[in-house]
Each structure stands twice: as C-alpha cells, then as structure tokens.
Length: 291
Image 1 (cartoon, rainbow, N blue to C red):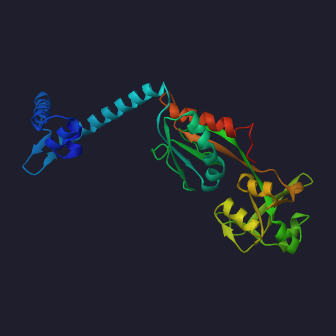
Image 2 (cartoon, rainbow, N blue to C red):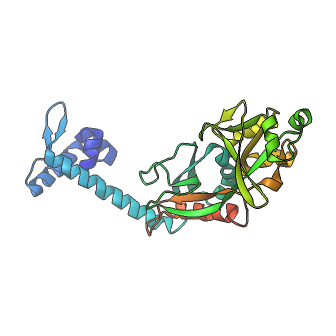
Image 3 (tube, one colour):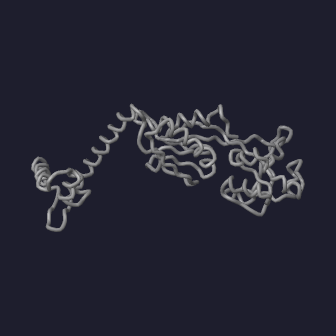
C-alpha cells in the first residue's frame, strides 16, 4: 500500500487502485510510521513528500514486491510456461533463421508472448534489456549462460548475369579484376582468406560498395553489382533459387563463426527462457547446420 501511494501520488489515487477508501490507506500508513517510530511521508494539501527514511523504506518495499513477483512467476512457470519473452537477434539472422521458427514455437507454447527485436546493436542481457540474445563469434567472459546453436560458414557468390558479363574467377587472384563487395566494419584494406595446397593466405580485394550486413551484400550481388563473401545463411535462399552461384569453393579456408543463444541462467531461470532456448537448439543445432 505504501508503494502504491508513492506510485500514484496520493492516498485517494492509491485507494482507487487498491479498492480502498483514502482514510483506510491513510490509517495504514500511520500505523507503519508508528511501528517504525519515524515519519515516512511529509503531508501537505498539495503533495506528499518522502523523507529520507521513507525513501529507504520505499526502496526496500519495491525490492520485496519484485522478489514476490519473481517467486510467483517461478511457481506459475512450473505449469505452462508463460509471460513475456524478450528476444534479441541481428537483422539478417533474425529475419532468415529466427522469425520463421516463431510460429511453431508459439503453437507449442501459447501462453508465452514473444517480444522480438531485430538489431545489430549488442544488448545488455544482464542489465535486463533482453531475456535471450543470439550472438555470433567468440563470447566475452561473463556470468551469462550460452548454448551453441550452430556455426556460420562463409561463401563467395555472384549472380549468373554478373558472371556472364565479367567472367567467372577460377582462382582467387582473378578477383583483382572484379568488383568485390565487402563489409564496412573491418580494416580499410579488406582482405578475403583462402587456402591453397593446405596453406592459408589472404588476398586484398576492392569494390564499389561496402555494407554493414551480409543480407545487403547478398542482395547487391544477386542484382549483378559484383562478387561478395558473406555468411552462408544470409544468401541460402538466393543460392537455392539460382540467383547466386557459389565461387572458388576449392579455395574456401573453412573459417566459421559460432552462433550462441545467450541468457541469464541458474536455478531461477524462467521456464519461458528455458523452453525457448531448448527449441532453438533442437531446430538450429548441429543436426541442422546453418552454414
């Protein structure tokens, strides 16, 4: 009741929310102050003002209420998992690999509300910005729990129209004569890795367009702008349809980056998080490689 008074700004407003009279709310606050022997609120005709003791009491009250909510949610989750599940994924991988799985997941768990955000920004899971995030590459040391969803391999592709006009590169060095579309978040002199006769080496490439995601580069390549090297998952539909053709596969060094679902684990992990991560592992795990 004390927390409601502060949240809503008056005894009468708190009473309306709690279905109590303003006088009943006021008497309860008076009894709390008498028991503690301190004033928690300074009352005036216009406003209620927290004392220092009141601010400390409010902080403790809100913490207790939050713990109670967590406890009740944990007990409820032992039945049918329920509640809001906040998921963060990158633009391309989310659209191509995560979003298509939401319909079957929701069919299995109708009481879970999936709140998904697609962004290449790194969200703060420990800070409460998401319940589950899909991360690529090496994971930083942290208290978070991670489960591997697969690996993303790289592939060089171009459209049939581009190759018909400019020729097909047969060895990596042929790329010097081509428009190579690259990412814009790495070194200014972009290089692509290759392997020949068991030896790895890097080749500098240049092109007319750079972008911050593989889906954009794949679309540009499919439109005949040039040749690109991106994650296999981001161009899998275009390869399957014939809009893009894999190139120089004999020289592919086989470099991959791991894909993980990252979340706050432990004994108090909500059931909605556990069932969602289990579902992703089942659908995207080693038995279902993404590249």
